[in-house]
Structure formats: structure tokens, C-alpha cells
Amino acid sequence: MRILGLISGTSHDGIDAAIVDFQESDGHLVGRVVHTAETPYEPALRQRIIDALPPRPTTFAEMCELDTLVGQAFADAAAASIAAAGEVDAICSHGQTVFHWVEDGHARGTLQIGQPAWIAELTGAPVISDVRIRDITAGGHGAPLVSFLDELLLRGRGTAAALNMGGISNVTVIRDGSVVAYDIGPAGALIDAVVTDLGLNPLGFDADGAIARSGTVDEELLASFLAEPYYAQPAPKSTGKELFHLPYVHQHVAALGREVAPADLIATLTELTVRTIVDDVRRANVGYLAASGGGVRNPVILDGLRAGLPDTEVVLADELGAPADAKEAILLALIGWCTMHAVPAIVPGGTGAREPRVLGTITPGAGPLQLPAPVAALRDLRLESA
Image 1 (spheres, rainbow, N blue to C red):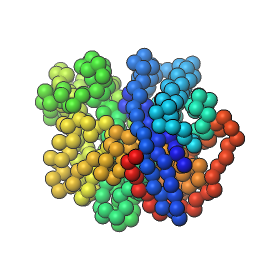
Image 2: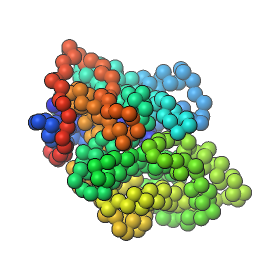
Image 3: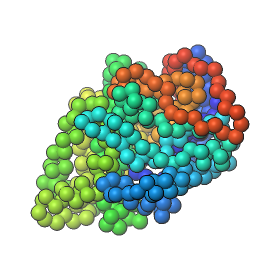
Image 4: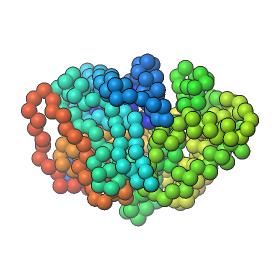
């Protein structure tokens, strides 16, 4: 079964796509990655998303329009992937997260926009969507869902971990068959917010870490950031741009009572990303760390992780068959396959859910909705390149 996975992460810069051809036999699943693609949001749409995110106020009218516009953007990205790589049996769309409600250390709700009916209408394929909320109803955080894929890929590697660095960094740690996963803190979220706000790069991020490399870490400001109470909370836990946003940076800088040069601010936020990840990976005593997400394309971050973790083998997730830039889209394809086959796609130790659950809601495509025979459980997963 060929599944197209679609996601726009907390960097809200565009849509990642992956088509995976899955073959299952007696619980052994092989996924052949036949296509990956990245489609940037139109600048005007990206700006509207940014302007609607907390702590800025928004309206139901704006949310309705964005739900449609993002859904249409996802539909266009899906159609382009299908045109490039051939028809698919189903599509799994994560959509764009605009709010993740966490209160008293518990996830209460989550909101992803990008109306799936637009995708189903344009492509004719059934669409699985709204994949996080079922985990939350079962007591989980709805994040990091990637722990399900990580656990399958890291089996048999001893104490190992998978790190994803998008807007928010998250980690999955596998030890003696047990799984712990959680959001660490900001990866690109604060860096991108400042780069965009100050107009330091029209791309909206610190390309190749050039800005950070030109600055100097402000240790006093870094200490202020590191005092954030979220870092001391026990796992499982989740966070997002509800906490780590541009005004959050402004508040910390204002508390210093002095100005911070733009390059020094970017250098400090980059070091914050490195330091929080290094501290958590060290505590977990991880021997093997597979990294993915946009953060791996920033050499200042990747070099900082390797320097801070001399006893840990730090590799890209490509070594596990999951290209670092497409891993989350591959995860969505996997979730889609699991939902179509009635396979739970939650690792309770990863999200904090009481029990595994089948994820998502299905929007029918052009024809009658036909589900394949259920699969009892997955024993393992092997990813291959086309």
C-alpha cells in the first residue's frame, strides 16, 4: 500500500511530503521511500500563519480562512507529489499546528489546521488527519508522535535515542526495551522568530548558522533562558510556540537592562538549543543518537552537539533509512498505513498515554472507502530507499 505523508512542523515554513510503499508480512513491515519533497509556503500565507500564532490575538474568521488556505496548500503539495511519483492509496496529513494546550503539566487539547477535504477533493484519495488528539484523549501529550517510528527503528541498538530538531526539539530514548519521549525545548523556534523579526535573512532562518557563527554567546542572557521552569519538568511533557515565541525572547532581553547585538542574540539562542539537548542526552547516558529535522542543516548546532557529547555517536537519521529532512513526513505515511490497517500508532512510554490507540480521522476520497484487513501488530520496520 502506497501512502503519502504530509506535514508542516512548528517552523511553519512549508510542507514536507513523502510517499512510502509499504509491504507487510506476519507483522514485519518494509517501507520503500519512493519520493520526498519540500514545498515552501507562499510568503503571504506564511506571514498570516505567523501573525495568527500565540501570543498574538486572532479571530475565528482568520482561523476559518487559514484552515482553508492551508488545506489548499496541502492539497497542491499532495497533487504535485502524486504527479511526480504516481498514485497513492491514501494520504495522511498532519496539517499545521497553531495551538497546543498544556495546563498543569498535562496536554488538554491541540489544534492543527489544513482542512483535509481539500486534499481528498483534489486527489481523490482518502485522507487521514487530526492524528494527535486521540493520544491526548487517552491521557497522552499528543507528542512526540515520532516516538512510534523511533522505537521501531532503534530496536536492538542498546541505549539509543532519536532527536528531531524542527521548531521544537524532541527526543525518544530507548533503554532495555522501554521508551521515554518528550519535547526538550526550542530548536529553531526562537532563532527563526528573531531572524524574521529583525530581517536578518529573507529565508527566515539562520542559513548554515552563519549569523550565529559571527556572534558571541551572551552568558548572562543564556543563564536567564536556561532558568526556564519547563526544562526541569519530568517527562513525558510537551511544549510549543505557546511558550517559546518572540515576546518570550524580548522579555528576557529586557530583563538584562541592556542591548544585545543581533548576532550575539542568535548565537545565544543557538547555544540554548545545543545546551538543552546536550544536558538531556547526557543525563540519559545515550551511546547512539540519530538526529533529524532542519536543525541538522545548521552546522553550529550539529558541531555543538558532537562537541558536547564526546561519548555519544551522533549520526543523521539517514543511517536508519529515514532521510533527516523527510523523517516526519515518513512518520505520517507510517501513521496513515497503521490507521488504514487498524494498528495503534502510539508508544505509551513515548507520549504518556494510558494505552495505544489507532490515530486519526478518515475523510473518504472519490470512491467508496475500502479498508484493508486489519493487522494484529507490528514486529519491526525496515525502511529502504527507492
